[in-house]
Image (cartoon, rainbow, N blue to C red):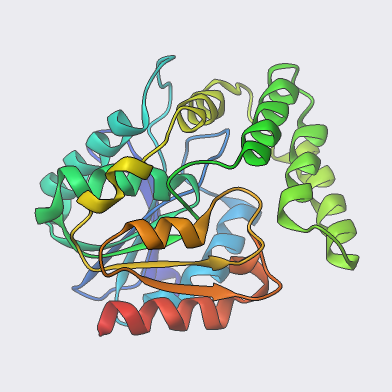
Length: 266
């Protein structure tokens, strides 16, 4: 992937994005939760390019976060409306859509409220609500962030990404270092993300999703009831990877990307 095929910036309504590829067909990814709502740069940009470059085969891929300086109480549905504005005004819709982790919570509202803007939907490493363990972990991360204890916040996240093995220790070290060099000045945007998803429960509305849907992730996911989410969506396809959890995008990236592309092209 050449540098000319990679760009970052903000949408007209203020959503930070990373874009890779040059195809006329658009694939939009609603990104996971983060504490710094701004376009990626430096090491983070290189990491994101590595994770998503396989999806740019035949697509122009937009990985889009939430706008900065969100007010307290901003909801998952409010975030969905921001994405709808961007896609209608700048991409012309409809698009293929991936909701990644927290972005999957937002994508559920989007698919119900704006089905005319969605060709195919992928809920990746996501579900209709957070598990109780997931809620508690995110609250702990939020408490650390309020105290600006970034190393503790990011290291705590590794508990959910890797439950065991050498990679748990390696990623904990990586996050410990990242907490020193990549910490945002203000945690408020991430706290709004956490508080909004803590309230999110879409179980009783899953049946209202009528666009072709793939639910994909690890069967040991710490944060979301992935299998139950697929069961609630009419005719949804489910792909679960044994022995993996919320780390699937890191440890099984090639197959993860190929399975998503196969669904989008089917």
